[in-house]
Image (cartoon, rainbow, N blue to C red):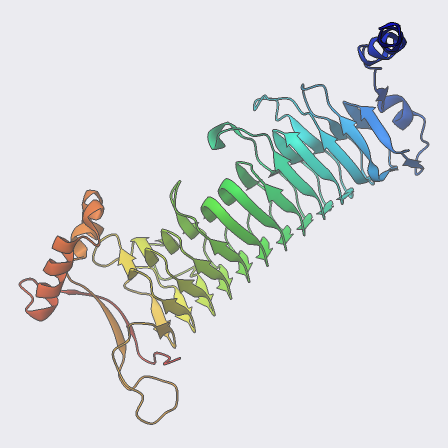
Length: 405
């Protein structure tokens, strides 16, 4: 018995030590203030307290072992200068207000580099505000665990030019947003679990290439942004929040090339211009297993579709009304349901491929009827229409030289 009491008394100091309050974190701001212009701050492994602001050109290097934790209010780390580098940090703990754009990192200058950082528990990930020629590369960003409408953007760019957004990984956020930001490059990024994979507004001449967008409500939405290059992207499982893989509205002279759009509500949707000018060129793309392969809303169009693959979409081509997309040019595309032959073996169908509207014009012209799409009743009606039309079918397109494989 005496031995047990002795053990209990010896353990009391340990219990008191465990219950002691945690020591405050070392603030990062004084360390930054001590670095001269052009100097380097290599943080020792550990945890540092934010928020903090970089106000002169310098290098802040966490070497993958330093953590900066915000106080749950505002932005954790702000770059309010030009020519700074931030790399190798783990950043967490931003605020939760959308009005203040509470972010992990704010970049409000030119020629900065933000590379190889890990951001978690942040409302907005990286916010570029009025900055040019910045490089955002190799970062991993995971937003706060909130419903989609309450999340912030994994990356938000406003009024920036000639920035490079490259090889970042974004998870659990609302959108990737580019507003009033022409002439930027968005290359090799991935984004999953969001609303809009990319939301591009009033931002002409962007290069969007080699990105991987999956399980977002909508893939890439382009509004009022002409002369875009959208090349080599993979967009999959965009079935809600508008549900399109690639959507263009009044964004002329775009090149849409070698993209793969899989299992979306609409593979490609275009608000066609009223005249065949300012056309979009789509070539070498694959639209497969979507509800609608391509959809045209509005006027006659005048776009060019060359060497694309339309594979096993429930409806290959949809239009808002007869005449929409009627001026589009189709040449050398592959159609999985083409019913012609290739008797000379040159890889091109002997007869043109045609898309007609039969009973499906009901739900295309009356959107509320789309609920019945692919229903047995509408399928039967479509079969009877094709067998013995009781109304004049409408020709959507004619591809004179369809590919066989």
